[in-house]
Length: 188
Ligand SMILES: Cc1cc2nc3c(=O)[nH]c(=O)nc-3n(C[C@H](O)[C@H](O)[C@H](O)COP(=O)(O)O)c2cc1C
Image 1 (cartoon, rainbow, N blue to C red):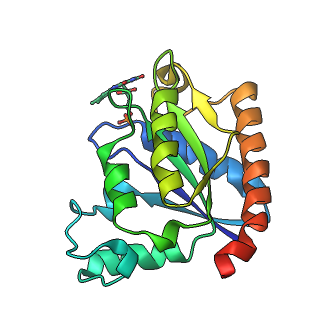
Image 2: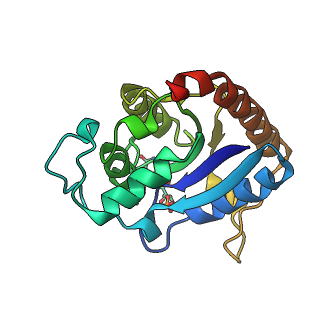
């Protein structure tokens, strides 16, 4: 069984990220091969990186880092749900990534970005540059949601359409392939 985590990157009050995460979490229920968990960075509430040593050494001194390390270590694959803030991905996600090192390695990432006309794609591109340094594998198949507010109803629920569902399912299929292929590297 593939252990998959969906990470919600935005943490501000009135954020829209969780609506999009709940859509993908619902869609993932069709997949028997994956066990899914939601990691909401608002709930996890990591402080700004407060460890004295490089994460490569795994000499963690804080309980929140030890817990975060365990969570990421036990994961095989990720879906990051990220907005675009000033053409980049949110500092909350960068901080969560910077906390650890080996825990992220050889794990594939499907990126769901959302924004205005450009659908958060600049954020996704910037994210790829950072996560490859951690030896993660960002998938070519991603989900980019333009003018995403059109999909959010008065109950704050994300209403997808056929094209978005198709693009999400394509990304998930690819994510499963990569997760299985990278297993040998993760085992080393
Ligand atoms: C600080 C900030 C910067 C933003 N920059 C961009 C941007 O560069 N491109 C874009 O499409 N939308 C931008 N927006 C609008 C966001 O797409 C919109 O507010 C979205 O709801 C943010 O995601 P969240 O609600 O999950 O935080 C920005 C919003 C904020 C708060």
